[in-house]
Image 1 (tube, helix red, strand yellow):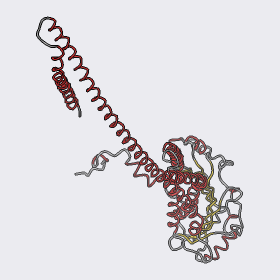
Image 2: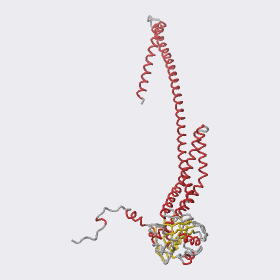
Image 3: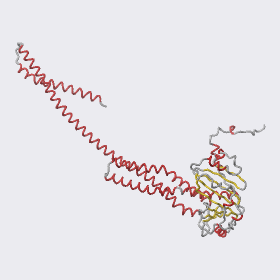
Image 4: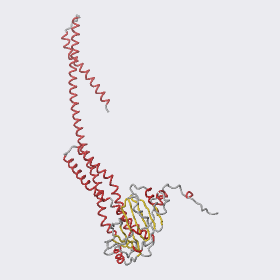
Length: 449
């Protein structure tokens, strides 16, 4: 029997979920870059708000030999273009797009140089970087060279000279302190920061790519995390004012110094302003927290080892970034806390209004009860008068009737007969009236709930 070799997916498995292949391949969507040392890595990250894929695709087509590039090629939000003498990576994220150029480093810019100029050797077409659609928020020139990391202090001396004797932070990174990473976190006149990585000659291209990616992502996520800081500073006076207003409303609620309607109007206005701030800015604060976690994660992945007398990248971040992140998180908590306190004050005001409404309802019921009492008394008075009136008319009729009988020759005395009939008529009228009254009461009770 010849074994089959033409098996297909449907021979063994049910039909695929529509997103199975997409989700499965997500781990391969942005593979680590391979970098051959010595190398110059030029990295630019731009905010892509209101920037479409069509605009970015059009700009990428300006590169030599990329005229056939179409938007469909960018649907995965990742493209790696291999061009003559350099490689360019394009990556689009939710808020920003990254462009990473990797090319060979010229001899005059390597470790022995002093504050070398790097941009003149770019392999990109002239003006291509400046034409990237979007607004720049991160730009880094990362140089990766070979060096003897075992003598880390000697390498650090050369690195300081390479940075032009500026203050730097540095650490040994990777398993077994494989590489030396140095930076000054300074924004130069060109708009770029500088980073330097010194690695042994046997460093693999994939390892160099991972180190570069982590360093670039640390700075990218640091800057994205800090985007919440100006928002927090802007909101501070508004939140302070809102807290003071809430305190005043609470005091007036306690002292009954203002009407419920006035307090309710002010409270609603305050709640609307806080809700507007929450809707407008809470995403930024949440993003700051997420980016800060990514910075911490990437620093952990560096596996830093300190060099005596020099601050590590992680220590620098902790000292400089933590206060800003704490302020952003504090502002976010103030908004949430203020919203909750406004809700509690609203509940107290509603309770007060409910109590006052209940008291007013009780007073209204008492007034209704007194009115019904008066109505009943009036009804009884009218009922008594009605009995007297009806009895008077009946007695008058009897008087006329007896007078008519006497005139007809009957042996009766009209006044005497009428006087005798008065009590009988009164009793009869009273009895009939009570029966009618009781009948209506019975019908009313039967019609009730």
